[in-house]
Image (cartoon, rainbow, N blue to C red; front, side, top):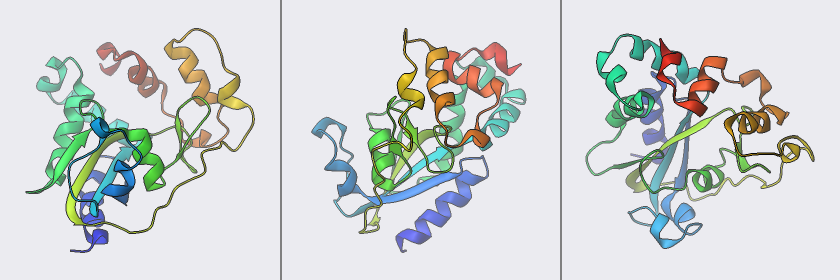
Length: 206
């Protein structure tokens, strides 16, 4: 299979659960940007697919939570559900790394795949969705990936925004940094998703 076929297959599987970001690169393009202990296993030319989501994922998760006693019993039901949703996209010989538990630099992978650039606050800024996205997993496929690198500019589109939001390191200030970005405001998370993202309070899901 060509890398485009793998991308289409994975996008079709994860898209059913609202994971609407799937972007490719070759493994060597990621590994050469990372220290040794953050590199992923595989051959240099292997395909890596970054899987992420925008706000489109949230209703799929909350519906699953409402109908699953197992998720309600989990300390972090979203992470568990992410693994349930994305797990089937990995076939034999393929390795799936999760951003919430494995040693993988999702921000570096986002820049190498062209998903976004690193903003002044350290957030990934997508050209359409702005900072309103989450980077969930990396799938390594033992097939040749795209040889070209789509690497975005590291600079932001403005000279203010998230850079000027300063103060103690609490979640409301991180939210203020996101809200200050002029890109992707139409794709802002719902209030429920925002609060859960930062607090992990399961009471918000009921």
